[in-house]
Length: 428
Length: 66
Image (tube, rainbow over all chains, first blue to last red; front, side, top):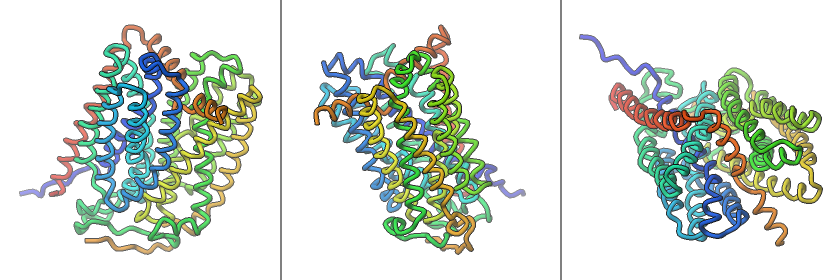
């Protein structure tokens, strides 16, 4: 009689698969919101400005909700927070499709969708991934972040197709049903908050472990019990400020790419294609750098990612407009989402996984609010002088500063990967 | 203040609708009649991924005796 063979694939990868799916649904649904503007504009007899204001307020509310989502994850576990948030997102999406006037639309988008979105992207997910993976943490986080890139490529065309063939209500009904009836159950059925719940250790190494609520985790010298304590140390400020620059530069491009292209004589259609190339290269970049980060010093890779993006911003200023747009798409695309896995993994390794959700939530809030402020400022500058050159120049300078901040993190002395680690026992 | 609100409203979309529309028009034009098939296959791929993930994860957990 032979023993029953164990599963070949570490269960953590199933968890990452579910988080990939969640990221796909979340980012895709969020990016597709803009597709419906012309319909709402006509149906509600409101301006694009009013609809943009709803989207802008949603962005800010999403940023402000991030720390709460992270703290809830640390307290109640990512499985509950993420599956609950996905179910709320589903209900919110159906409601948005049925909204009878712009006020209801605004309340649902700002109050329900943007708040619940904080529960699915990315503080909760990176916190759960940190518990499941230690040695391959960067790789795992890059896979879940890549779900966002795939979501933009798959879900946005699907929403556009449904809108064109079946109408606005049907499009949101399908997306809402996919989130509430597929996304939420997938998260609830597959995700486990900690490997110890299945008697496993992080990375699946070390053989079977005792079943408990928390697996033993290695911690570095700066590991904290409360997220507030992280702000008394240098790495939190270095990583947070660099992440603000990430938000500033990505949000500016997401919003101002077409107006910039128009200002230098490039058509909307060509600019959109260049942005599509950027999104595709981004997918390759996030997966490649995620795996590299597990082999190199994360701070070096993070610094390099910011430096590469800085070069992309500078090239836009010096190259002819037509060529510059394509070069920007390739160079900047390789660095786009790549900061997420490295920043999240590094902060979890420095401050420990116990408050990884809250720490990531605070950083994400800074990222979102910085992005919102930059979008506003870039628009103001363009309206005043009719050029995006100062925006790109400022972006390049800020990215050099972000690279310097990242290179300055004393990773060998503070990270659990390098410090003389002490194992914090799990909880039975 | 009104000027600030105008700028906020004009420049604060999460992703520019014109950008999305331009990208989708390009893709639809390039794929022609195959556009619905490609979109459908994408949706089907996502659904199969979700169901397959739940089934395989359940099997993996039962292999662990959980």
